[in-house]
Image 1 (cartoon, rainbow, N blue to C red):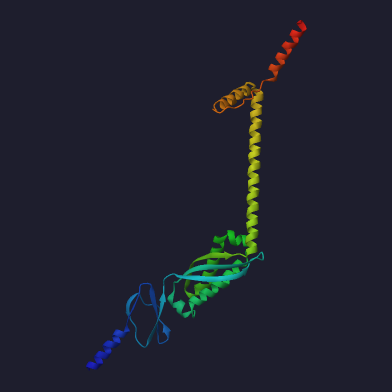
Image 2: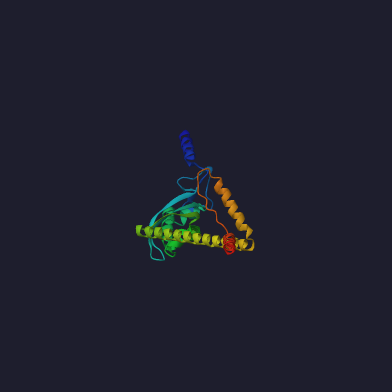
Length: 252
């Protein structure tokens, strides 16, 4: 009797199972899955009638290896990505797919090649957010029957051929030169417009030119170094002196 009690106690102890907060246990009783997974905490399973499969509910990081892809404009590139997903239905993750990690990795690689192959290189480099959202929606749609939720998909790196990198560098340099020439031309145009306005103002008010002469002389006189000052004389003043000289000659 005592031996039987000891065996019973040992059996009950072996039936006690403890799983962590982020884990769930899918129980198969006589080959049929129970409707609700067990956990977290402590619970009993009936051995050997019950078989337990643990699942991890934490977010899993999947690194998609680099894929050789030809874009829509016939450029060969290597693209890799990172995917974050987690199990939302442990029973489906165990019963609907043999290995959900391997299956998610494979569907991610094929989807990455398919989506990137439909866009041009410029879109791949400039519209990352749009491509990431498209990849996330497609992969999540394929993994949903397995009880998997794909939360984030990010394209990490785009490896371009050396020839394409040099061509893009030349294109960027030409674009910078074009912008520099446009900015310089706009500056010349604005300067010409301001000179035109200044000339119009001086033509309407001739005294403004004389004031500008005096201002220039004041600025030049503030320099302590010796300098030669060229002072422009109005032609009208020279004409007056010339007229006075002719009158004196006529009198003589």
